[in-house]
Image (cartoon, rainbow, N blue to C red; front, side, top):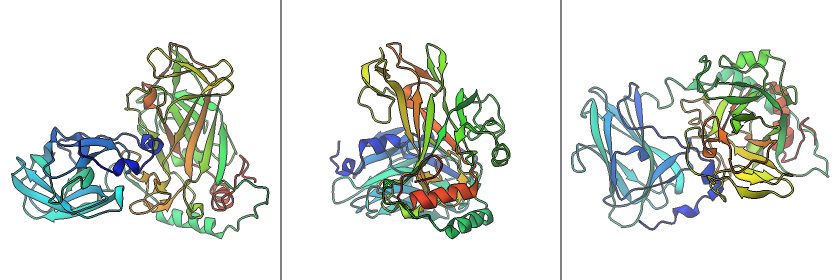
Amino acid sequence: MHSSPRMRILSAALLAIAATLVVPPGPAQAATLTVQAESYAAQSGVQLEATADSGGGQNAAYLAEGDWMRYDGVDLGGAGTLTVQARVASAVGTGRIELRTGSTTGTLLAQFAIAATGGWQSWTTLTTTTASHPTGAQTVYAVLRNTTGGDFVNINWFSFGDGSPADSGPGWIPIDQAAWNAQLAEFNSIVPRAVPATTVRVPEFNATCAYSHSHTDDPIVFPSMPGASHMHSFLGNANTDAYTTTATLLANAGTSCRPAPDLSAYWIPTLYENDRAVEPKDVVVYYGSRLTDPSATKPFPQGFRMIAGDAKLQTPTPAGSVNAFYCAGPGGEIGRSADGNWPICASTAVLMFHLVFQDCWDGKHLDSPTHKQHVSYSYDGTCKGDYPVAIPNLSFLIAYPTSGSAAGFRLASGMASSMHGDAFFAWDNRAQSERVKNCLVQKAKCNTNGDF
């Protein structure tokens, strides 16, 4: 293993928030093919770590001179100009990445000079083009070159395309710029209320939600495909189903959340105890800020969508794991399930989960193919680079009316590690904007009604 200072950059809690995204190598019928760095078929000298970059998952880390990764079946398309990109981070620079076809010494396809980006988890996208290249499916090697010694770069992904924007095509939903400009104009025109001297200076407001209904639907991941998902427990908008759109949310006056102007839909995988569904006792949907300067926060655009967590992540969550279920109340945790993945709570305590969403946005899209690529976490207290717009830091504080037992639980999506949440926003614009302006921008703790 190469020694490296980079693991000091992020706390374990923030690393756990970043959800896994793995796209296997192979042909894809798209203008741009993205290959995740961790999806190699073979490698030498490479290790993986959780990434702070958009979409979460893992990046290839501890990369030094002579290390390499092999990707099979990378479709380079037909003849013509090929645009190649690499998503990288480096605290030291001084090296390069070579992409070669066929072998580690094969034809040079592209290369990227690595300069310091500001840290091991401070990400930037490097771009180069080539007019002549092998066509169709190829074996591509990423070879690391460095003459000064030591680790010099992290890699999140590579992309290969015809020059079309990487953020266009299926799954990318562009914002209606005129509607967003109008929403921002209204937000900017609001004069914030004076904050009483006794107010707790924490940027926060909330929606208090009860369980509404259940469906094997997911209008973000599987729109217009009823029954295509695992079972979800829905909160908020009363009519959320596979056919939900922004218009249907705004047209429906029923919600299990307070305040009434929040017609958004929120959902999580259903929890089961001995094959019996355990629905949340209550869920507080917090809108807050982790920014150094919360005054930069903007409201969510109408119809904005995002997901936190990963339904496909199936790994053990023993005692002490971050981003895990826990017990709250007198007595707290008194044991673990037989498989070690679930807490057993005292009879006076309840099972809880705190799910934290991304709080920086690209400013251009309401949604993206993975439902995470348009957003990112603010790991250093700022929103910048590809994600310059600060949005409220959404989180679900979920309480279940159960203490558990040695038999443990299961989620509709699988193990405890697969816990995730979806949010599809449909606030009354004025109501949300006033809360953002009064509570978040002014760093003041507000209640469900938006009052200090």
